[in-house]
Image (tube, rainbow, N blue to C red; front, side, top):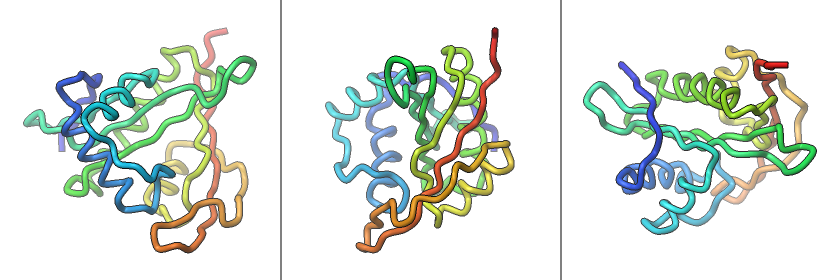
Length: 166
């Protein structure tokens, strides 16, 4: 599948919400409990440092990512990102295209480190991708994620050192 990544616009909110809300509804990867609506979605996606949309060869949105600071002040050089891929496009390397674009964009925005706070241990596709791309595991937080079915899963924070300009 040919993938092009472009920046979110207000006109994209319905499709971006649909994909984001799929992951929230699945309840196995994102910490959010609330679904995005048109107003909250627009505000959410526009408030990020960057929201990227993955589009297939027909221009259909098949995934997205959000990129933003992980902290403030003296830790503001560390960014965080989340990725969502449409159920119909999973397994087609959309996530890999999103992560690679995100790494590049984070460097362009002068972040120095990309950190994932809560990669759920059962998210084997994400874990394999992050390993392939050179992310470093920080350890395991036992029972750090409440799954939709009510049980707790471990989370595995990761980081990636971005290219430095200094």
